Image (cartoon, rainbow, N blue to C red; front, side, top):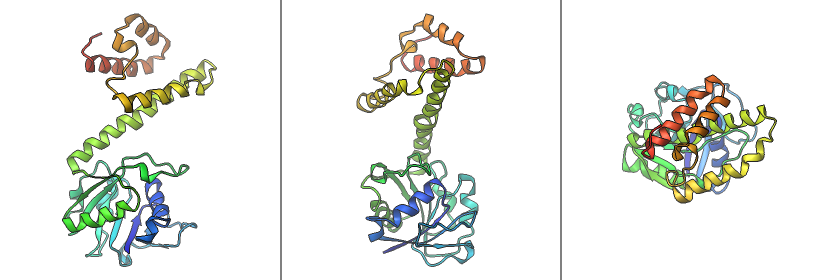
Length: 254
């Protein structure tokens, strides 16, 4: 049984707590404690709330699910010498944990929200380890959540995280801007739900580049001009930048 402590119980940390205390993970790992800034007890957890990082109970793995800029500082407060210390960040190098002899990364490229239960079995868990022994433990822990595990180094992971920002955060912002336009015109915002699904399915089945459509790739300057006229001035630069990027990708110019 692998003993785990989770530091940080926000979106990702909270969901990991729940997952490790549920089957099938709970048959192989034990959540022995968790820590958060608010020192708030998790009512749905049998693990102990830890209020002082300098007095952590014995553990095999300590997962840091804290903001990126807090990882190094928090890790320096951990004094358990034999435990593996791993963070869950996509953009922070593994090397920030160098002062722990056993360290690694346990990164899940997924969007986590408190209101939605994640399907860990669908997520690729990206691992990086300071040694073969550390990797064996991270593989075992990852295997309790998903069969999809990848060995990704810090350089690769930074690019993966950047790609995830494009694919998730930026795309979602475009959805938000589209909703604003429909609301301004008193149009049901769900009218384009089928288009959203089709766009995603084509991107997965054909590849995003192969499935690109629209006025930018057609070099339809008349439509592009009309769209720009409909937009508020503050949103025109975003439209122009994306249009130029599409045309550059596909070898066309405005």
